[in-house]
Structures are given as C-alpha cells and as structure tokens.
Length: 226
Image 1 (cartoon, rainbow, N blue to C red):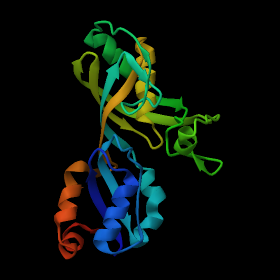
Image 2 (cartoon, one colour; image 1 turned 180 degrees about the vertical axis):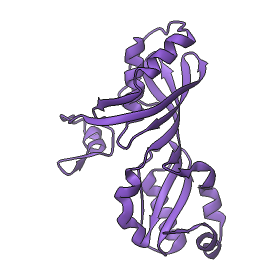
Image 3 (cartoon, helix red, strand yellow; image 1 turned 90 degrees about the horizontal axis):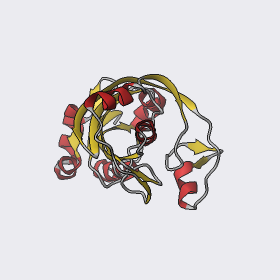
Image 4 (cartoon, rainbow, N blue to C red; image 1 turned 135 degrees about the horizontal axis):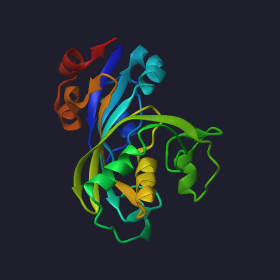
C-alpha cells in the first residue's frame, strides 16, 4: 500500500489519533499525516501510506485554505477557544469597511512568530509540550505569505473569513494579530481546513465513514496511488 488518503477530521481527535485509527483499520504501521490539525480544528488531513511517507515535506509545502471564525474582544492564553481567558474588552460596532481593511492589512508576505502551543520543534522539543509545563522560550520569526483573505460574515463579536496561506502560517497567531489591529483582541473559535494545494475537502472521507467501511473497500476505492 503506497499512496494517500484524504480524511475529513472532525473536531476533537488529534491528528495522531487519526493515524492510529487508520493503522488499526488497515493493519499497516507505515502511516503518517502531512500537516497537523489541532483538536479544535476540523477538515482536510492528508494521510500518507507506505512509501508516500517519504514525500511528507512535499505535502507540507503546499498552500493551505481555511474557513476561520474568530471571536473579538476576548484573548486567551492559547489564542483559541480551548484556552483560559486572559483579557476581555468591549467590542465596538465596527463597520464592514473597517473589518475588511483589518483583514487586508495581513495580505501578502510578513513575519510571524510561532505560538508556544504549536507543534513546531525548537531544539528538538515540540513547543506545546513545553507550554504544558508552563515553559515559554524565545522563538525565531519566519516568513509567511497570505495570498487570499476574504470576509464572509459579520455577527459581532464574531466574524468569519476564508484564508489561503503558505506553509507555516499559524491561524491562531493571525487571529490575535487581527484583534490587536482592531484594538480589542481576538481568538479563534472555529477552524476548518478546506484545501491543501489541489486536494480539496470535497474529496475527503469522513472519519465515521472510514470506521464503518470494510478494509478492502477502503483501500480499493479511496487509496490514491502515487
């Protein structure tokens, strides 16, 4: 078995949980994923099987697309809804023009510092594991490129937008930056990955479908060979 599965990860399980489920389902150990999704997030997870695991860096390098919903006026220690509230501010009645201007301010190339709750490794250690111990360390900024950002809904204190970005873009950090630009703070409350390069969520299997499906059917119909 050499190829990829496109999985629609639900909110709740970790990306590694999906790896373990597929390993049990296929009775095959050489399975990994190309790009972590936090437990809070849902959407497209590219699973690599067999020799395809050697192509991980190629898949990780693909641009990603997300549907994002953020909450204005509330900052958390993880920059998402799973964290503890560290600041609350009143949210002004921003106009659509003001919000669109805020979003477009982040379009293009910029530098971003990885959050402590990310899976990025520094000196061989994943940042989120240090964060769980209450340890914060210096992180080097890296260049990102946001090629598309479009407002889709305003329902204050919430707003939603579609995002297309380069590898290494941390959406939770972007949400914080948008909140800071608007002057009220913000965090991510919903995040769904809809595409990785040319691979789209519409092609993905939902996790409950994978669990119900016979192993032979799953491999024959849904393992995309490389």
